[in-house]
Image 1 (cartoon, rainbow, N blue to C red):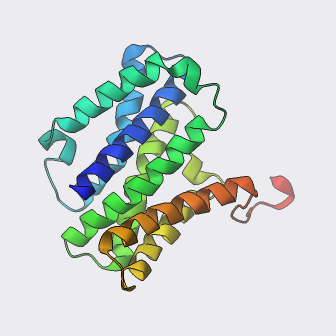
Image 2 (image 1 turned 90 degrees about the horizontal axis):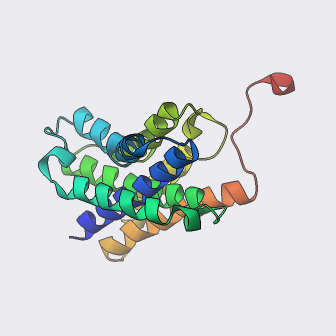
Length: 203
């Protein structure tokens, strides 16, 4: 149940971020729904295909489609309020990557992948919905820019395996890793921490 709740919360967070990007681009209702949908389930779909878990989870459980649909309606109705929160898209996206990284790691552990591969799977789950969203909305995906994004997923995912070694309940290790991802991302943006630029003279 705990894992399921985390998965649904991640779905809601990413669906809202998808709605906000799509509405900023002035897409029609169908376009808004599609962008929200692929943002919410794109990474998870790729994850399930990689580990051979088919049909993918949202085809097996209608709750995901219902959750996304309800979230789209909510985000559209309250868009005018949300858009005035300057950091709202960033916060929903950040919360989403924290939640979905751990969902992906849990899926990896369920099929007996190594910790390194679990972290990779978690990063894919967290990042690729946003990649598809940005491509559909004609933006360079955040993961391919210099911002700390996938790096936060990797570091936070790795921290989960460290927390697991502590004498604490596994749920606290889970939450600790999610919080670690969110804090890394927030600090990176707040203090302008970025990966090195490989281009000289800003080119």
